[in-house]
Length: 409
Image 1 (cartoon, helix red, strand yellow):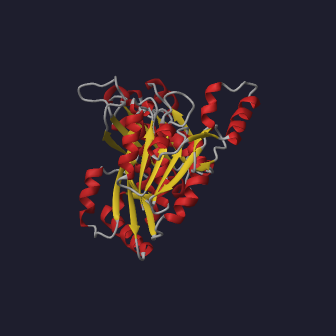
Image 2 (image 1 turned 45 degrees about the horizontal axis):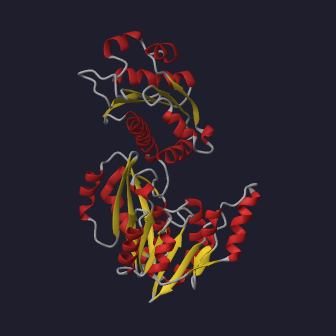
Image 3 (image 1 turned 45 degrees about the vertical axis):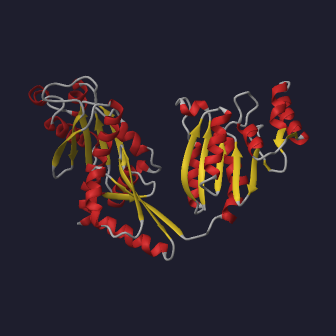
């Protein structure tokens, strides 16, 4: 079964409202085995909505429309639908009572304009709206199915789950579909693509880059999909090497937390340019007190000296943003907290603070154990918040690789 999602509203085209409905509907239809072929956004004019309807019905079997079901003059979806399918709009007394009751519950008189929400196309299936006043509609005609849903995300999701999914699940061809997402870090999308060139075509593979790394989404359809998915995932792990750290929604901080717990190690963090983001990410994980001892934000040079014992001469000679300072910070916080590992960041998040030799996006990450203290240099971009995300990810990656080495021994 092939589907199209149509979103209606000038606010979507202008960028004032982000279209989250299409993503939610797309995921749900994909889970049901429906192939979403098109996502179309149109404004509130009746001509545009009509053309979108006609185009969608001419190329797919299932059309799901969101938005334009309200009572105001710019809510035209229902009117266009009724004209296109030659359905009269008739007053539904039950819906009118429900709309009026909602206003009475709020201690308000129902505006006359809301009577329009009780005007529904004749001979269609009504979909109950438990959270709002605008009902949805379902019509089957010439082996095509069209659903009209509200644009408000909460209302749309309830109606999709309760009114659309039961119908579509019976219609969809139930071929076996298996999916898996592999999560990577420390490698670019283009470099990952080059590594996977030798992958045998057994699945659909999508690359989804983000600030924390590139996700590899694997989809396999048809006979023995589960077996083929496992073979494909194993191939990707071999080709991608040690850049794969997890699956599905696993975060790097979750993986690192499990490593620390398995090894019985304690961690302390000293952050400058990341401003506590590493500690924040680690402590988002339930049970992190088992392995995370403390985090300190030593943003000024004075705090690095006073709290962590970084020698003033090190900062004077090499600068606060340097390998030597990062190492002294990592060693200092490890000793201060009496932990097995110390992790540190010092860099220039931007947009100011750069020098000819130290550009925005430069960061040094230090890692200290009782045996050895090391540092690595990274260069990121010019966006402050993005840099903080990437710097924190690089620090966690450095720790992850260190712990992998310990687990392998």
